[in-house]
Amino acid sequence: MRWIDEQYTRCPFYGSRRITAWLAGQGHEVNRKRVQRLLRIMGLEAIYPRPKLSAGPAHKVYPYLLRGVAIDRVNQVWSADITYVPLPSGFMYLAATIDWFSRSVIAWRLSNTLDGSFCQDMLDDALGRGTPEVFNTDQGVQFTARSWIDRVETAGASVSMDGRGRCLDNVFVERLWRSVKYEDVYLRGYESVSALTSGLRSYFAFYNGQRLHQSLDYRTPAAVYEGTSGDEERVFRPEALRGVKGFGAENHPAERIDE
Image (cartoon, rainbow, N blue to C red; front, side):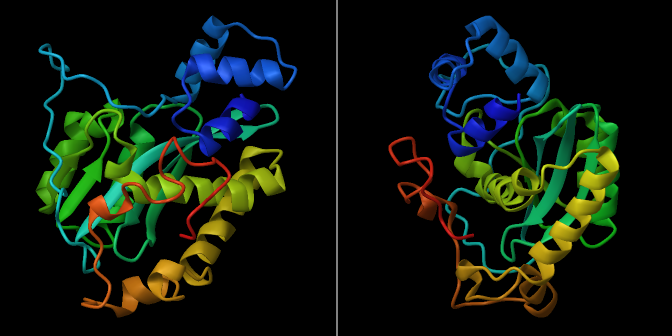
């Protein structure tokens, strides 16, 4: 699962067939059914366009509200997502909420299950710090639950949901996961939940308060989030990342954009 997680983080467009073949190339002979089972446990799914089917999901599907929208201020758009985090004796799930304009991590939580309660705790923490105009997520069960939707709408935010298989709709959280894993989790190799919790607390403090972002004119997320109400010189549109190096299956997986 650790090997799968690293390869998926590099190449989120890899499905079970490619991951099985890649594992075999690394000397790990496993069959595809096992890889599929492990991907389900880890909550991972390859990113690729899917056809629209006439039979919709059981939950209400909210529209994606950010197509063509200029992101030019803090608390305009927040996103939340969940990722798998490996440990020597098991694994944890990490959820985080990020502000699109400043890249600031508003709140985060760890859990040993995908039960939605830890996401709800994170949401309450985040909304205790502010309220976005739009809250964007994927269509995971944690974010389509009535308790999540009601909390977001009661706070006064509009609900936005990614199209299925569209990584660029929630791109900033995907980039955050790569930073967290390559700059902290994989490097430090945490041995326990307590060590992971402490390490992530330190990393997110560094990420928000000290890590300079090229796209923020070499400022930190905290400096932008806490000190900027608007910035006409730096406007982001979601479409701007289409075809950018590092965000397409045609690009080398090791190539990255400086967040």
